[in-house]
Image (spheres, rainbow, N blue to C red):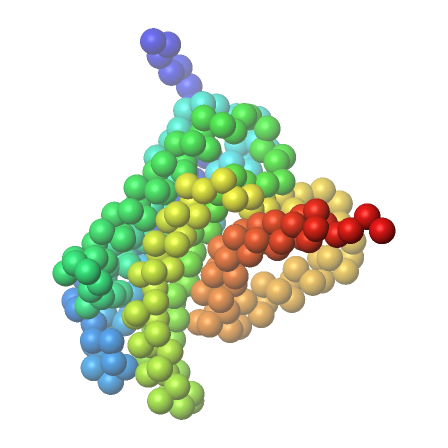
Length: 274
């Protein structure tokens, strides 16, 4: 065993910032009682806690993105930093979203009375497996353009995004109440299935694009920069609805794109030569 002599201070603090965000997301979610699925029956404090917990998970993603970038910029990357990063990711993008899912859908039952607990535990376990596999299979080069399986931050953003929508539905008095009730009931019934799907996608071999490397790395055209700017402005302006939609679209992109590729390949094999 070789003892560690030195560690990079600033990147390590950023990594721990990710862990702290995940920890406080769990603490805030633990304060949520059992929210009624109907809009009129939910306590305002519970609604706010759901939203805060979701934003803390997103804040953890900011720290998660910055720590590796700063470490590479300062040329202080190390195995210690990589292992610590994955340990923190398990908390912020595995345990925290799983626990938040339980708090958002406490009345969900299917086959078993505690189905939601089973789904949440599966989500956390798949996130841990996904991160362990990534550590083993990925080298030091961070210039890759694809991931094998849905990245754990992307899976967590699905649940965190719907947590923010959960809050928005109860604050958006301008939208027709019947529509809000319908969307909320669909969210309560469908989010556990979506959580289970994202858990399975994390441990799958379906390829997903490395969005950060594709959008921000290297030289890009002026139009590309303007398009990215407008995209993020639109996301923040309509964040209550845009965040969960964008996160879900990215999660579903993998299996849909794979299905399309398989269909195209099958059609090509079936085409006659003449």
